[in-house]
Length: 150
Image 1: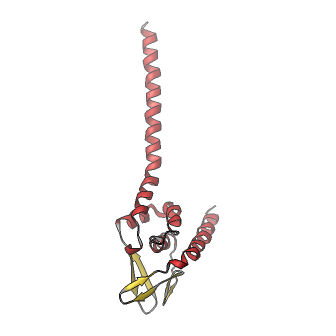
Image 2: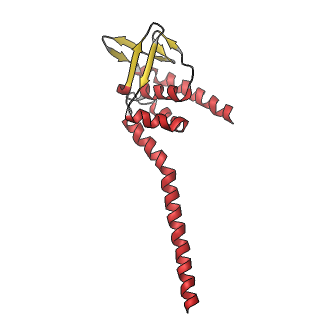
Image 3: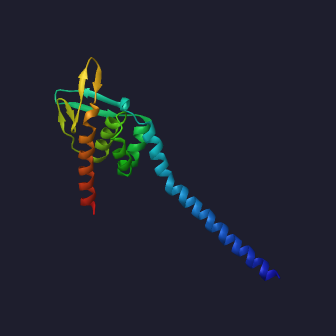
């Protein structure tokens, strides 16, 4: 009788351990994805700051959402690439993708790394009509990086 009772407790303990371990692994596995999605939701073009120099535009982005995505590094590329399709987020996503993935940035008088910017009376226009061009730019660039990593 005692052996049978101990055997059942042991089986229950193993089952409980399995369930708890699986739950913890799932939470730890999903946490980065959830954090990335929450940060992406808070990312906006207004987070982007542009400084005009003689050599071209220098773009920076410093917000809580941007810092969270930047700290994830290339793991946030998929989320930022999807944000390129949103007219309210595409410039911020482009700036972060550039910050994360490129050491060399193309500076021109009216462009920042293939993104056209207009400056007028203290306001910047990032030209939402270039979204498809930027999506293609990053699709090709990130695919080439992934191929070189393999």
